[in-house]
Image 1 (cartoon, helix red, strand yellow):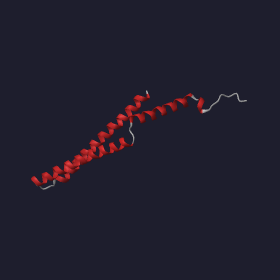
Image 2: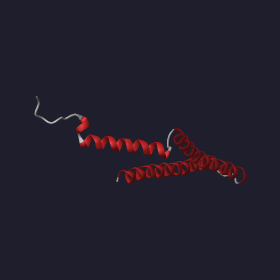
Image 3: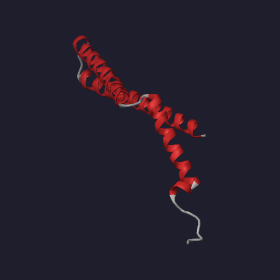
Image 4: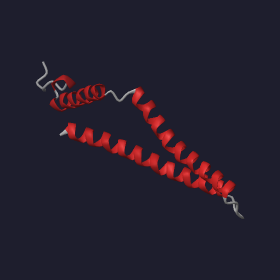
Length: 110
């Protein structure tokens, strides 16, 4: 016979706690419904937050070029400004969503 205690994973309290945490995390993920549709919605939000300022900058540049012609064209300059503003806007949205996901995970783990 063997006098050593059983070291199988089913008798290890740390293993059981780890499995419990993973199970709770999976249940929270299912409950929050941030699956494929959430990802597609976020991609759409990021896309439109870049496209709209870019198009507005280009439209304003075309209008300025038609009504106030000058030595340098406004269209390209304002298109780049609109693109930069859109990228900053998208970065803001993604950072805010990432922070919200991390805050929710840390609160639930406590």
